[in-house]
Length: 181
Image (cartoon, rainbow, N blue to C red; front, side, top):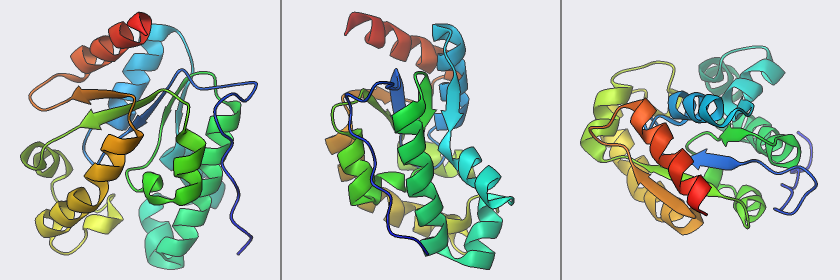
């Protein structure tokens, strides 16, 4: 594997309008696409970019190549999105654990889609498309949330609750907050 790719900091020539972070099931992809449409900008989902680069679904990358290989591809995808996107970017739920990614997010508009355990568990269900939740998904999700929530909170410049809300309402809320900033 190659050396870790650094993530460009804010202030690059091109900068995303907003970067969505949050746990599995928070709605990053759905809300991100709606927000981008509402703002009239492009949408980048770094998990989709990882799958495209690998030529296989994220779940297959985990099973066939392992989590370290996925995280390396993810770091590169986030770096590319932060350095080249002028739209909305959704990053995978675990991407924020990487120190280079954390550094790259500094100075950007980072929107944390805050989701409670019950809502996240209901949304992710027993999906095999979420490889870190294979086995006992509820227990694993609880561990992931306990580990990641402090990071999401620290990185966020905007926090939007998602529990009990429709994706379009969440996107409209974010758009209004972006317009007010």
